[in-house]
Structure formats: structure tokens, C-alpha cells
Image (cartoon, rainbow, N blue to C red; front, side, top):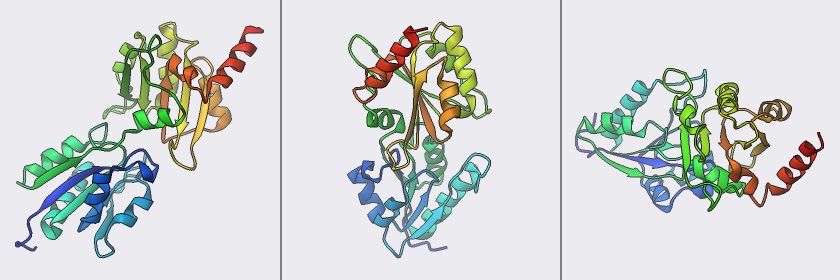
Length: 258
């Protein structure tokens, strides 16, 4: 191991999928990297910013197909920082929004390694925006919740129960496997008619969207074969989108006929 190299790790948020949605500071970090450790959900076009001589290491995790455990990823980051000096950890979205970035920083800094955080645009905001969905709108929604659909125990977050009782817009990440439970909870609290959107592969060329209400969204997902990675947006702001309004207007007309 080389001892004359000063190690540094920069956590860079890659954004929601569209390669143009990475920050300028993130691009600069990639251009100066000696080694990049990147996730499964980052757009591979971003690796074009990395110098040709730099090392690239895929450490992505997909459901049921983990190439590395989180502990192994932590160790790889530290090992490569000491070996190459300027290491970039490229993570989808924002590193500190359900990205385990805080855990990685804690481990890295325990070795006395200098760290830097470059925030990324979170899918929780960018993906609804790509469909014209305002997470807040005066007179409609005064706040929004961003919740992980699946906890480390592989269970649905208890915060969903609290969010279902509020008037806030609710954005759920990593929740497709728990969608039936989510629907049951919102229905229990009298929200069966609330506008709902499922957006798969948001901000990318393969983006797909399913629209409906809490009581119809499971059928929509089945019909359109929607799956992960996707975000769930629940709230009247969904039907306030200029891009989606015509769907909900026609949807309500059909509903009112019965």
C-alpha cells in the first residue's frame, strides 16, 4: 500500500437518473477522481466524466442481487482511498436521503480520512417535478413527507401510518413491494379517493407513469406492469399537475357516471 498518498473520499449525489441532473460540483469531483465506486442506479453516462486512467468499481445493490454488503462497500472505499488518494463514492439521488451516506462517512472518518459531501438532486423531488407534480401548492398541500417504504428489517415504515392521517403530500421511495399495505393504510384513514401516481425510472428515457387513486392504483400497476425502481406520490397535488390534469378530469367524469 502506498503511504505517500493523502487519502480523501468525496460522496457525490448522482441525481435521479437523468445525467444532466448531476451538479456542476459533482462533475468536477468525478473529473478529479483517481477511483470511483458507483451504485447500480447511477446513469452510466456519468462515468464519461471520469479520467480514463482512473479505476472504476461497481458496488451496486439490487433486490436479491447484492454484489457487496454495506460493510464490504465501506471497507472497499477506505482501501481504495488509501491506495489511490482521491476516491469518489458515486451514489444515486442524494447520499443523505435513504442512501446510507451517513453510515459510510462515519466509517471513513474513523480512519482519519478527509471527506467531502456533494449533495445530489433527490428523486423524491425531481421525479414528481418531471411530471409537473408540485409537492406543495398553496391551498392544496402545505408540506410533504418523504418516507422509505422498506426499513432495514424489511418492514413498512410506521411513519406511513402517521403520513396517511395528514393533509401532506406523501412521497414513498422503495415502496413498491409494500404497495398493497400502503393502500390498506390510506384506505383505513379514509383516503381511498386521493390522487396517486407511480413513476418508474423517473427522469430517464424509460420513464413510465401510472395514475389513479388509492383504491385503483393496484390495478393500474398490474395493468401497466410497473415495478421498481419507482416512487409513489400520494396527494391531491398529483391531479394539480398541468401535465396530468386532463387524465384526472376524465377519470372523475367516468367515476361520476357510476
